[in-house]
Image (cartoon, rainbow, N blue to C red; front, side, top):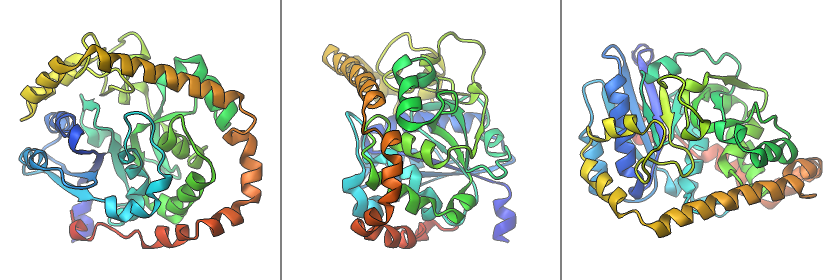
Length: 342
């Protein structure tokens, strides 16, 4: 009975903290507006700690065929929290997507979306694309393609072609295959073996899934940094600092505000934008400059990931021994028992 039910289910994951709940609501509103009445959508929000009244407001956005559940995964991931490097305004939530295969064994496949996305098409269309023997489906990162420093970084520091380096904010995960490949353990080992400072979660995913990626058209992850508008996207992703909830004139901003008006957080989102200061804008600018500088430094470094990969492989057993919890962590991470049927 459960297997037949799951044939019609589209599992969609987000990761959010308390501060990002208003923007999560916009993402969910866009999913609702474009969802098919013939499908069941199971939205899972990965979080850590108490989210307060905001979570209740988002649960109030549910419909008969769109269900929302929050999962506190902070306690489960606490054992490797010290290894979850985050720069600037990022939080450990960026890593939660990497544990979905083990946390949700009831699913063989799922979509993960960043909260700063809006859908202009049915997410089931993306979910239904056949992954075959690929670990995931994704879109080549437009922010990387458009910046020379990032292109050099992916090629010289990671050993990945800039044309193949994908953005991890919109991905379809082959959960069954990832579990079978021991993905969680491999991720933990990689994270403990090298300090990725440019795009920690995204770099790890690209390295672990290299050559096992189904690439989608750009319309499924259209970014403001991608340049001129060509046609209506199926999904807009306000990546990096180009957020319409902070700045005016952001490409594809009209879609964000269309769906923001359909949420219980609309006035709060407007108020936050009005309160956004020049000092905050300068911090965004400085963060972007710092990121480019990091990419340049890593590309030139004699000790970057690519140049030390062979050495790291030789010392792999020592690293695993040093971080003796890795295998146990991967094995006992466990599923989201309370919502196993969701």
